Length: 559
Image (cartoon, rainbow, N blue to C red; front, side):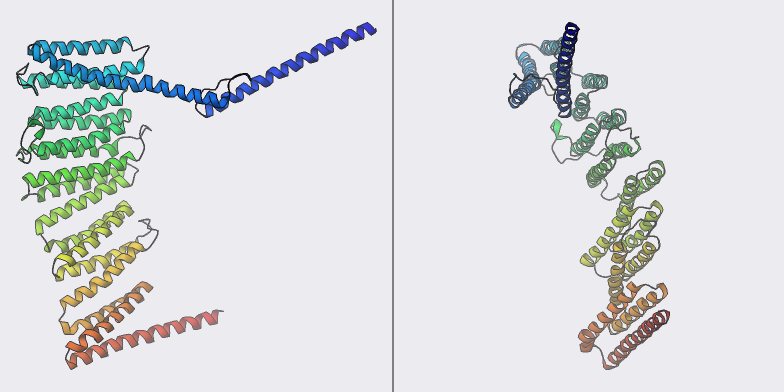
């Protein structure tokens, strides 16, 4: 039995030893697992290292250095080498033209391009990034060699411009196809900018301007298909810059700057560009680009379109621009209504509504000229406010207020007072203040700042209008009537703000009476002014004192 007990003890000891070893192995596995999780969190591959390995800090230094060297050799040198190769082949083509005739020199260039294409294809599996850069260089070289068949050389290889333009656009189509097939935004950028460059090189109205329009449309299509918003914004700027270069007589092709062309097709194509980029708010959001692209495109398109339009009008339509801005106002207003019912965004329809009314303001100015146009612009502010109510747009209200104040300041700074303009300001300020107070929930206005702005404007414009419309001896009486008007409005509307305006009017009237009228008015007018102002002041004081006492007495009885 003792021998048997000894054997059992030995077996138990062996089993415990194996369990201990198993626990150690499990601890090591858990340690490796934790290291792997930490490595994934820091976006770096984690490796399990035994205790005898190098220090982790030194290891990170080695990994960082390795990554830097890898990026430099794999990506940096690939870019640099491709750029050097690009210039090398271009210089080779030009060098060949010095010793060979035109067709042979072009064949040498095409052969070099073919070699670059083949090298990129050969390295496609083992060196993908280098292969991509070589293909990119080959496409640029193909466009350059084709361009040199006719343009920027003394003796064209192909003397017919139309044939070379067809070949160039064929290269651009091939670049666009490869960009879509490879899902490469960079290749798409190259193809579209090549198209814009070709439109300038062509130097033909019916070829260049449609090419610009097609480029603009294709960039919006790529935004819809692939979400390439950076490409679309870059093309947006480039399209309007190209149009401006064309308007100053296309100096790229050696024409003198400033000798503007006279082709009416410029305006038509400009409207086409603006319309194309205005379609961006209709592009459905599928998570391919940020939501901020909608307002960014709308604002940038509006600004660049406006600047280019000013250049077109200054060149061709300086005497007949009213119909242009009237057309823009009508189209933008209809488009704002369309966007209101087709999209859930607030900014886009509001922007086009504001742009429409700004265009209408320019048309009104062109039709009536200043200062007669100012009273129409002031009344137009009421139309804009009604539109803001319909759209429930706080943006339109704010912009309309700023434009209204700008019109008032402009009129007072640069033009003599005109009675109908002055009272148009008064009516607009009064009606706007009442409408905003009436519909502030619909406009989602959180404060009374906009309404207070209109009330302050009403106060000063009413005094200003009365000062210029009545004879000087009746200014005090007219301002006293204005105070009565404000007191009456405070009673009808039960609004303390009109009461404060009435008190301020009485103070202004008293100041004017003592410091201006006393030295100018005859005794009869002076007595009448004093008595009338005193009667209004004392009557208001008695009324409001009685009202305050009655209110206090009521509160005392209730308590």
